[in-house]
Length: 308
Length: 258
Image (cartoon, each protein chain N blue to C red):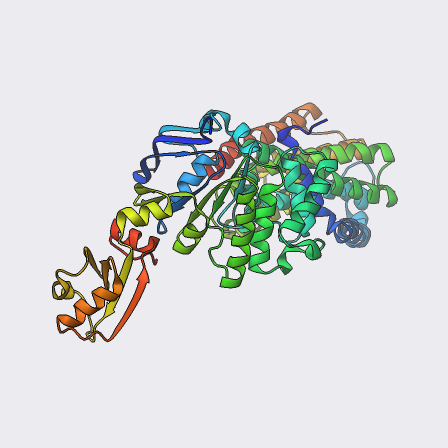
């Protein structure tokens, strides 16, 4: 594995008196897809921007490629590809011009940029749109162009800040497929997301952030293993509010989580749990049996649903 | 050879300009033609019958032309250092996007300023060529006038960049033009000598960069005497540009590095 690509120790970012990132530690190795999971305001983007050497760190240590972002920002940025939360494309220029211009910021000669643009257009499935103005593209196309733009300099590390937020399911799946291909080529990716399915699909390892701190770290499977049971039984009762009803389910499963509209029972086997529920004389209005996922981990760690 | 980082943001602005250059050149050409026809040749005939603003026996058209050249440079400089800057920070966020590349806030500032000066130079050169066509000045006077006008625009650009980079929306920009640029355009000796102004406000005109730009342009285009030595006016404009940059650059950094 060699030297880690990114290493943070007690990394802290404050804006005035507000602490956006509160003394976090993490290490990102070459070739892995590393996720930052968390609700809006958890400190994901601030962490990304510090890694991207565009936001000075307030306290602690951060090394990117072994370099200090506060001192060697230019050199770090030259080796990074960044897909920011907002596309910030040149709307009135063509798709090709957007890629070419971005390559020029990295001082690439046109002879290098030209074939790379063709290759990236192919990768981003935008070859047919190469001469179209960006303003005419769909949201998904713009997003893919933003990713292609970040790849123009052949970066060693690609940072994607909420790559699929705001896209329709179709466009998200196309994007995931592209990111998966990047991963297979051996790229190191850092992804922030507040979508559990995205994190489960793409990330080798992830941290769950909440309130500027890291609540847990591991692979999706490890996190589920550690913080949830194999299966979950969701029970909806015929009541207005489920609060206070968890006592009815005492003794079933290892843990219960009460949401406004349902109760989650963390169990080994959902089928058996349902029988136990019925045996207690409870008649649910509806039930769902499913495998535990990252969402459950998140609920457990932060005590709230991941919807803002 | 690699382009220095401080200039790498010029090329994309030129590329973006390429989309509209035809319309831009046409309007840059029509603007002086219309002004010189209406004000110089039209209104000027009335002025020439009753007054001699230069005291040199030249026509009002000839007297007005170099003044308009400088005033146009101010307007171009102000226009290019206001709304496009706002777009870079806020509307299109092109500056924010560029911060993810090896460039930094200083590079963005320098490149943006360089491009503004290039645009002022271009508009002024067209204006000066029209002045030659109207017989106002000789080609040499036009070349020198292009330079003094460009300096005038450059002196306005940095303070306005500093002003714009503090704004959160464009209402401040409307105020800037309504209460700053337009009054300067009208009262800085472009259309009539400032000796016509009440004595009390005359020092105000001396303090504005446009009046110095107008003086310099008239001097190089018509060979007119300047009120102050030419180097004092040039120095005054350079000071405006430098002081503006001293305020604008940290503002760019503060806004882009958070």
